[in-house]
Length: 142
Image (tube, rainbow, N blue to C red; front, side):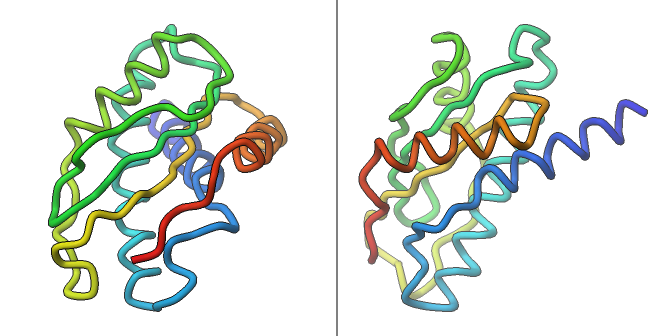
């Protein structure tokens, strides 16, 4: 049962992490890379933070810069919840394993946005995602 709950949480968070404003609107290769990168980060971050019982509710919208297989920096640009949740998400992003760069972005520094929803309700996740999107400038395009 716990595995099913964790799987549902990852699916829910993946849905919350996707949005309408993407760096990948230009190139199918970039769209595929972005989906792989964000999916990997969502799974790693949520998996770790779900183990900590105090992080069972909240929404964190993070920005990070990626270049050549590394996350260079990460910060929270929108938070609904505890400040220690924001710090934990940032710390986890900086420790995460990320895929190597595709040729189209080799050598380029790219800003990505990624939401992490820790609310049990998909409707709450959607609402906070809308609020975060309205408050934050769009991603940069390589």
